[in-house]
Image: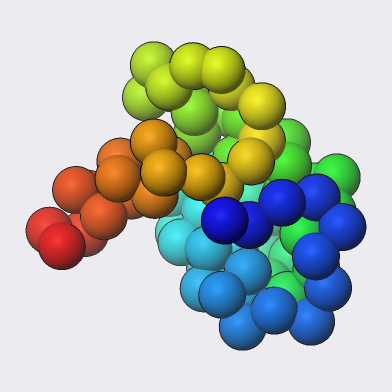
Length: 72
């Protein structure tokens, strides 16, 4: 799982790039640091997909939704 406070994560970079591509995160924020901007973007994604709770944590439900969109 990816959660607030994570820093220097290549997995966070991949998620951030995905969120940028979908318009949930502004360009330039693929930093690998899972901080407030990423949490807000994940919450917006969760709300758009009907994922509850929309808590900004990239856990199993959110991962499944992203994987489904990617055809994985």
